[in-house]
Image 1: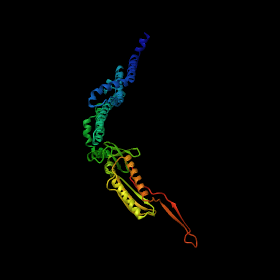
Image 2: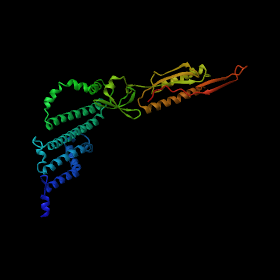
Image 3: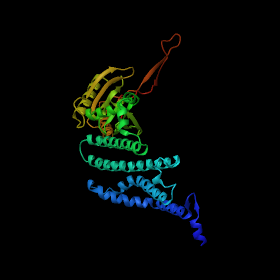
Image 4: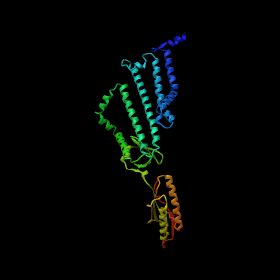
Length: 389
């Protein structure tokens, strides 16, 4: 009898039994929300799996597990409050006669439910984005690789804007139609405030229409060199050669001079061959002739290679070597360049010539003598003027 009296004891208009049911429902929802979200995601996957040719259930669950957990917990929270007797009943809190705190709690609950539902919908968009991205990776064109992320982000932005309008209309009672009409009056102020964002959005459409670059291209813009990884509707993300990740506004990608290095058909090699001053003219002619023949006959170079006795330097006779390698792969490029350099050294050694290094002469003169000593000191070698990676 005492136990029944205890459960029937009322506090703030509700019995202890009601509070225990309230706590039990919340505890059940907290403990089983993950299991229930996995079951629900499996059911939802059966609806959308015919759009995918692969088994994407793990990826689908990974995307939906968190938003479904939040949505399910809010549902259990609703049923938990339904157990309580008024004045804490949420279904009656929408009335204007209810106290302010109750109306505030109910509207906050509505906002969380709408946000969770919108989150679930956007994760569906992410899932379809994964499917179409996988299909685009199998095509030769790179245009679809950059269009899919753009339209995925654009669709998600529209969904969130639409959800925001629903929240304004259903939760706060705002006349959305009148608000949209009123935006025409303040459109200039909004456009001015969002000037940078609008410029980047228009620049993204210019990139898609003009195709100055696509995902995977190696570009150089505004002092940044790297590979394009993603083109969004506000910015472009570049993976630099130092493996850092740089985000560049789309406006800067079209306003600044852009060098698309991936569109090169050859990689250039340009350096000076320094021969000692005791190298004869016949040796120089033989070296330049054989090196030119090497470049012309190599299967990975074109016919634009040039080997010329260029000028007389301060410490050497300088032969210019210029050629082009038909590859964009860096590892293959340095392997071919190494092969040609070894053969070039063999040619120089075969004709009895020697490589020079920077030196300077120091003359020590004493009174009554023209000079007494001549000493040569090495100087740092000049940098190689070749293409960098």
